[in-house]
Length: 565
Image (cartoon, rainbow, N blue to C red; front, side, top):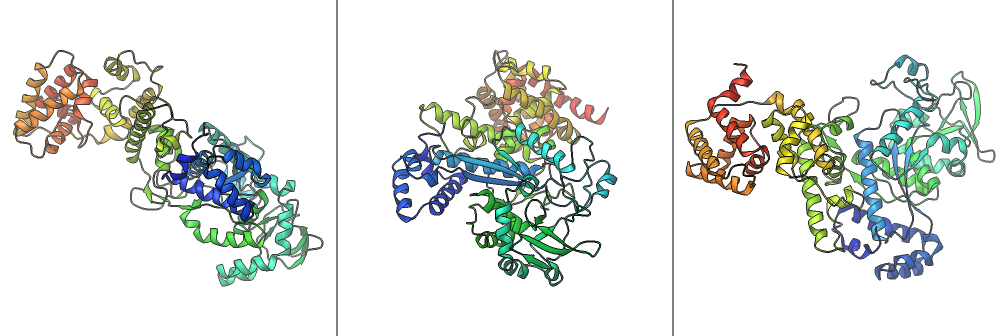
């Protein structure tokens, strides 16, 4: 699917390709010497990526991209965004290298972390209170479904990622610590303890500096992850000594799950142990990335490539917070919009802060549909025309569907509004007449939009409808429009012809600019300040029903219905 795209990818402007080129440069820089790198670059630029990667054994190891997840809570919008964006970089990298270099996407769960507070949105909090400070994979599951709270949230993460079709490898922190995967790097960290402290201590407050250690020992007596200072180090034995909660000096190995590293050194240790080549993170972690990069070098590794994305804001420009519950949840977006629209929203300008609230969903959905249509129009120009800069290519992991939706989401919303449609059959009655032969089975994306539009209308549009009476000027123009519509061929479904008559009626009655005329139609007939292209709406709604809608608006029946009179 990605073969033959490397030449296009080298010049592609979409941000995932910028990241992919940076990642490729890192791989060549880290794995090859100067002469090898020059030869590999020549071959890649000549369109012989496959030959380049087969030539050098060091390039045959998979390129590892990573995302992190903290399982003290359920997967959320940020989890989706990070995996979706990293997947976009991975797909761009595969295109850039003609898919000749293997890649892996690790979804890493920090499930060895100690539970420091009880999440507010889980049942049986009293169970969690009994296990505070223990690793998440030891804390009892308040849902009573899994071995632990960490296992429960890990299962939710995997189901969450699977539902979106992500290709990933799940890796558990607990498994890595206890199974020995981190042992070699942990022993290096023990040997270079002072160098790590030299990096970390200046970043801490005075009180924290006095007790800080990159190793968090796990008490053999209580099983808790303790923030206790390291009193002795024994590099020859691979152990540290700390004072346990009962005051007794205790020696534990840093290997085999005897400790958990503080999170910034842990991040660096993970990069080295897992051979991570790429990881992105939020703008709020810029300082953490800087410190972890330094620790990574101390541990003998090379920091991964990556970039810092901007954070989401709510409608009041406040940072989205799980604790506050402001902004949108995944479940809320997916009630009103397709997963594709969410992926499109994540693709757009990741370095710019974006608001994340309900009003962005219709716009994101329609922009996604427009991009998909544009991609397919270009694809129809020739079998080899693939617009890799189009967001649809990234949203669909390099394989966009060949058909989109013949009806926009905003138009669907207004169809629901005008038709007062409370079930799918009513809406499909309009749609099947406008699109002969169309069924939910033949137009699956359109059918999904029907459901989203009904939910959005019910929750957001219907409660805010505010019809008004027409002014004298507007009344005269609407009477003229009725006459024009009645003069059109019966059952006319020509949206352009209908739109022409709408324009002519507005111009004939002195609306300048015409925006005021369309706003009047929306406010009088639909009870809202904005609406769809009126000709397209009337073509689908039906000319006869549109005529009835205008008559009801002029007679005040729509306004009376809202007022209950």
